[in-house]
Length: 491
View 1: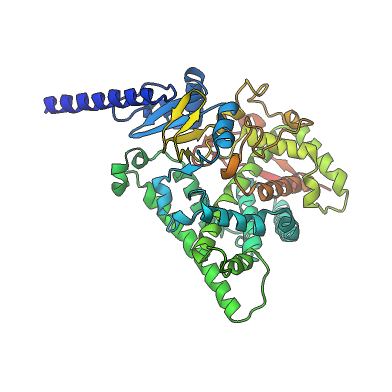
View 2 (view 1 turned 180 degrees about the vertical axis):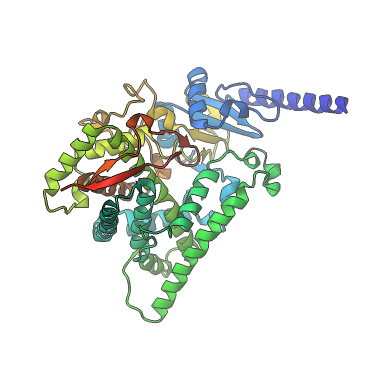
């Protein structure tokens, strides 16, 4: 028995050395030497964004890591990120689909995961036309304002009851209702109940498991076994969202067949689009797109809102400065106009600084080379996975003074933005795979933060020094402890 174990270990080590030699011959970037079979798993740990940032300090801005049978290249500086996401955008635009994502029934129609082919362009065109185009955003702003008005009424009632509020949960409900009103012309959450539980639990589960280390991804032979139960968890969450979304679509189709007056929302527009014989766009695309919007349009927006409020409550002078800035355009009437918020430099600086310091998606969804690609002095073979460590660049002292300090002033008067051209700050990515929902996300977060700050003072249940700033790693970095505070209406 001992001889067999020794033989297997020797064979594994031989194959490891052989593979390592092949990588070097191919001109792959340097990286830490891993162990047989498991590769660099022990180097990564439970916080990959942090460990990869540390490893890059030793092995350079472009390094190779091996996770089981999968070889991945990590980009850790703005220059290298620009090479991957801009200069070699098309060649590096592929995706490796995690095993958890295959639990989504129609994952091969999801814009996040499919190849950048004509089908992908059709879906992106629909998103731009019916959701994120500035004219469409302006057309639907009253819907978003109505949702915030409902939130404010809930907060006034909470104040009367001297009731503490879970700001992240409330922000999630607001983001969910803004998405549902935009897409379906209806609220899906009530602020004074737990009826967001299904959506919250499903989205939180997917944010955790889709970004979680999965042994089945690095040893594909284990995928049928699903050894960590990750795909089963994801399947339950996806199935819940899929069933709910399918119900909305079926109901709307029945309404159209019964000649019920049109709602004029995104679902109506997408159904019209699917009836165009000139485009390949069908009910599967609509359902998958709505599921994607419920996931991407809720947790990340509410997460950014919760972190922004966390920092403002920890920094009262900044809180007051945001309030003064909002008051200057609102006055005493209390009617906050969403579009004007985008022109408030300090409010926007606070949101950008939050996105830098508390990056919702620390590691951009991995890219994959579609062809052999030359990056600097290295040559990456086709089908090489590439991770861009956006979190590491956003906290790198080479590009940011006092990077661990919350300092909104660093975004004032310099044009530094998150639209994919300043590669030290790419919370939404860059290039053709860049998140298409930026215009909506910025409006949603701006309106929530401005409303929280303008209308209410907030009291924490503990000293500021006791604030828990720990995070849970997943596809998004979520607060480990919810931000809870008691609102007091500003007279």
